[in-house]
Length: 185
Image 1 (cartoon, rainbow, N blue to C red):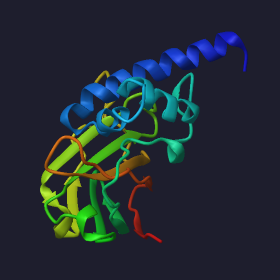
Image 2: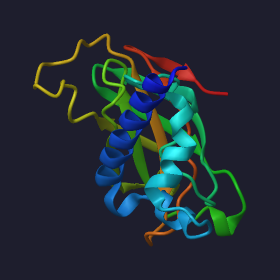
Image 3: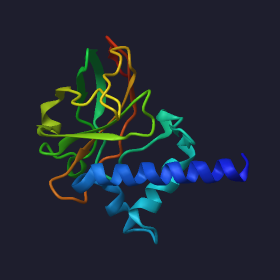
């Protein structure tokens, strides 16, 4: 990779992290993790996710991370999609002090054709104890408002947030195609 391309990727990732930080607001796991380092939350997020990006945005969606944290990650068992409505099922996993029933679900996501536009959907009424979430993506459009194709792949990153602003699980990557009905391993 030449210097010009590196500079372009760095600038793009910096912009992407700035957008992500703004969208995460009170659900920003990078803030609590950065306290244990000598880095700012934005710099830490940039360092972790920079290698998943190229000059157009996220190139390796599987490697991108929306959230990091110490809460137990639910064991996601099924994902289905009908149009822009998605259902995710899970079962509890982890030791009790890392899996509180009142932890709420957060969905970070990208549309495949918009790899430089991270989006976040907080579902405060969906708790870990509920074991299922059905939601409709609120914004299947480009930056100019043009509707996305119903064939668009959606890259989801579900994670849970504790009641405070400093407890999160690490996000999990789910690739969701049109009419998906997948049992997850």
